[in-house]
Length: 230
Image (tube, rainbow, N blue to C red; front, top):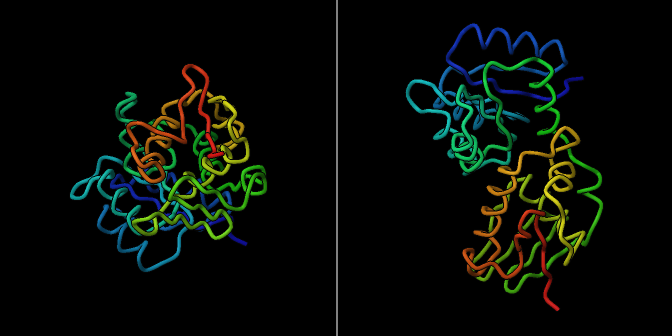
């Protein structure tokens, strides 16, 4: 049985061959694409669990392809980049990636990040309320729907998991490390930029005024708190 279907998107033949060989040996069913445009066509035509998406490609770059994928899909996305600055990492997450990895990378690191992106944490899924009311916003964790006064809002799987974990610990400051390990996995804990980006994305979707949040609050130097209405 396949461990999952992965689409590798990279214009470098050697990198494609390495990843196809590595991932196939781990039980994944692997398909390759050479460009962002080809990746979009394949995702629309076939069912994949995860996309490994290179940032630097001819034609449609990885960032644009990631944004396009996110408009219509909850698929897991890991960006592959040769740049290691925090700005580049934040840009990848802000484009809709669940994670990123910097080239060159080792096989254990790549496989760990794939597992982290594909995992569904029982702690996140089972803990906390089934629904959440934040002003005019109603979140149904069971059906994974978010309804606002203006209509339905789409949350990615990681955004849902982050919100659900906070909802399971209402009115409590939850540390960066606890959130990262609950949502991404035990290998995480220091990647605070992940949380900054995902919390900002959530605020744009659930807060009446994202710049002055009422519900999803920052606890300086500690983490985040979800304040539930009384």
